[in-house]
Image (cartoon, rainbow, N blue to C red; front, top):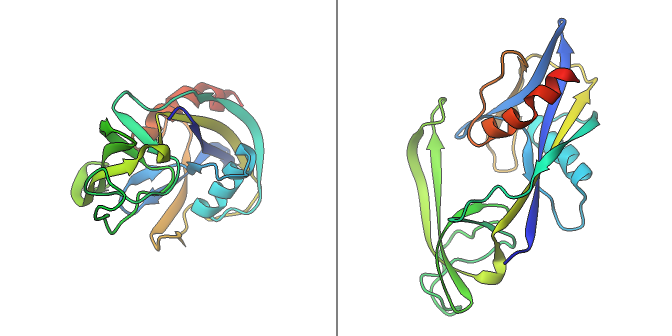
Length: 212
């Protein structure tokens, strides 16, 4: 269970009208955030951060300016991360009834207990308002997954990227789940407000971004 899953986060800057700006996007249910995601099997972290940037902002021409460091493990003692997309069963038995929804690779779940080769986890999908306060619960999955499909290690890498693409101040694109993302440029100073835990990511690299 100590296999680590790798994550990346993209801090994309551009000078606009003489002001250094950060590219963020508004997720329709999860607030203001930066591009971020999981490294896929066979992919390196540099390729991942470019891919995630394209998928969540539409930018096709970006340059990696700097590697800003990493968090060795984002998870606390009561969290686990899904490393292989998995069925969730109502009891610790592969013959038990599974949930309709699977838990997909990269999701963070709450840890409950273990039994033989299974782990009891809970995952709650919230819908948030514009201030990142839970507005409602979309669904809850509470059940058992094969322990081989989870890990207690999640390493996150931070990158500074730039782009020379000419864009509007704000635009829209459809995500792979048919959500409408709304990327926009916001001044880097004062420090932009991001959803938790992305606000902590920004705090870790903020002075470096200001100095670049």
